[in-house]
Image 1 (spheres, one colour):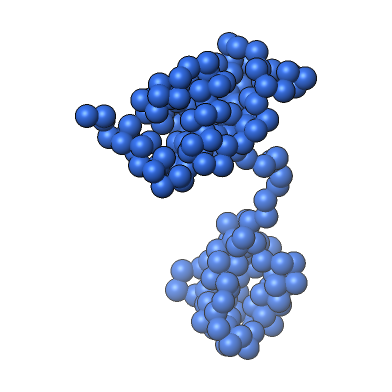
Image 2 (tube, rainbow, N blue to C red):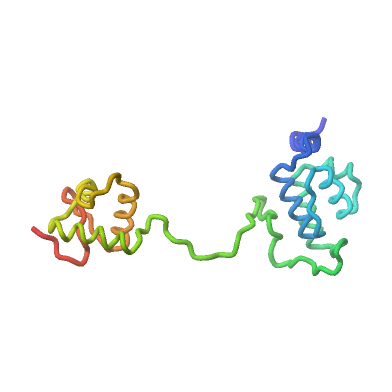
Amino acid sequence: MPDKTSREVYAALFCRRLTKPLQNAARLLEAATGDRPRTTTELAAFAADYLGISPEAVLDMTANELVARLQQAAFTEPLKANSDTPPPSTSAPPAGGQEGGKPVPVSAPDRPRRDPNKPSRDRQDDILAAIRDAKTPLTRSELIHTMKLKTEGKLGANLAWMVANGILINIPQRGYWPADDPVPE
């Protein structure tokens, strides 16, 4: 009787869907051969061709064993299909592969991300103006009333961001006040 992971492969073959580990294997095959298998039947055939083993041997492997075998083959063997493409770099694991037994996500190029709680410059100016006009520290609910907001929205997150970045200070039991201004008595 095959073990549980082998049964997953057989079940996946039966319904012709690629499960997560098999999707990783498909990505590795695509990187190595240029062809991406879309079904489990294609995956078994492509893997058998690429690894040089019988399709039955591919089916007897667990999904994780197949991924590991494909990674090993990608680092030790030259590409069999699309020989005009250079072999994968041996300095880094292939995209979507595994590192230390955990899948490595395929990521887009790093780019700076904006803090979702950062208020726009206009919003910061509106908050500071409302507090300065009141000439006294204001709580969040007082700010909602003073700024004539219908709902709180992201005001709480904006205030927390402004406190964390030194624009406002939170005086307990009194409210928020601009960090640059002296606190009124």
